[in-house]
Length: 117
Length: 108
Image (cartoon, each protein chain N blue to C red):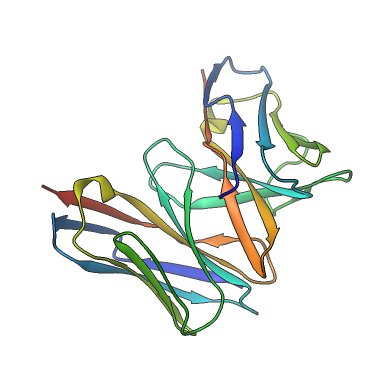
């Protein structure tokens, strides 16, 4: 299957600082990538859809000024958590969809554990 | 609104004891049903995509089936390394909607 690489895998930051998470599709081009957030023992919750060359589409309740998304190229999307607070501590996961072969398959990055202290 | 419900929430099996995980869904215009395996602290690992009722896919000890209302993930003679959380997701007219998962523990 296709490979999606996410970096870093974990990060600890101080309250009030910003953190950038990268998501790359390594062996395919992804015009659309997705960012999820997952709390312990909970399902993945979609935060936003990242579109190459245009603005991201945010889900209801997600602050677009706090979670900045940039889809700079067909293989790279970034999520920046601005002015992070302890309640932003969570597991963030990106995914990209590979189209073709009569259907669609969605592949996920390894996830980033963010801890805000 | 698309919805996915997985059961049971947790399942404990002896090694070799076969069982099935359930994923019930409601979706407007199913474009795909996905099964993933997620280990603690890791992102979901793709297992299968099913597109239409009656479709089945197999991979090693896992077999996924699909009806118009639910999907099953059958695990045959599981091993301890099959222990993980198994997630089901549907793709309709909105982005992927996930269930809460089934935490599977296989005891040697």
